[in-house]
Length: 380
Ligand SMILES: Cc1ncc(COP(=O)(O)O)c(C=O)c1O
Image (cartoon, rainbow, N blue to C red; front, side):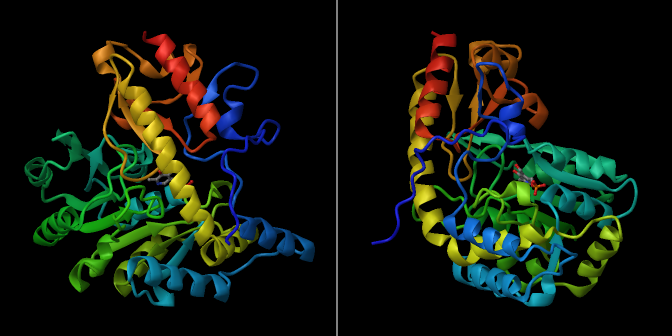
């Protein structure tokens, strides 16, 4: 029988300089905001880190051959994606990757299109790098957030260089279907746009029978214009170890990306490489059980929010983030409102959607139950 992992176990994260927990240090506020989980990492990751630390020398490290092999095996096994070693470009973080991407594509003043609401660095990366961010709001259709393809088409101008996609999408929790991805790819081909696809949540598809589809796998033509950003950090709960990578099959595009990274982007840290390799090699059973636990948490959040008057949410297909509409409750700043009620959420205004909040359910069930009770008491 395989080992059972205990996601119910409550681990005290105080005193570990946790961003998530320290925001409310000394206050009775349950932190369900920034996207890390309160769970222990897979035992194989912890063991590999111990072993590496035992060696005691931590010099500059290039991507270990074993990691490259583990990544290629993972992409082949989980997504039927055949990737060559030279297509990988290593990065110390995906926000860094988004910024490099914005610098790499087009010229100053060119436009980058993204669907909103969106993880905030999608909006800041283009502007920080001399580009213009063009926001195309997702729309609710049949209780599901979808892209407005007509609005997307209208937003494209001669200055548009790239569609920046979040797949699965943070914060609305959509796992884009093959048909939707094909529509994005067709449109990018028609207008000769680069596709930047952040797929950091690819390992966190919650719906059974649904597969993550890397957009680059749709066709050779799509692959040629796509830069995919990936990391083990969200799936295996190792975001503090900073190890991510881009997959770029087209040599010219890859050169543009590595030139833009230049000497500014630092090495990936030694322990990040170690953890990433162990996660891909030994984390699968842990991930499988994690998904079962997260599914339970998701269903609990859905039922809890449904029972609170004035709040509404859509089904979370992927990620451990629930996107909650508080507008019917008529609350001006729902982030602050729920903080005062003892629950720390991310305010939708930061995602270009005031009136919403994002709830991170990557935590023990007991904590989640308490948080939902507090939210319910605040809106009787
Ligand atoms: C879509 C997306 N991209 C990137 C990141 C952050 O990546 P990193 O911590 O590697 O910079 C997050 C974190 O929540 C995310 O949701």
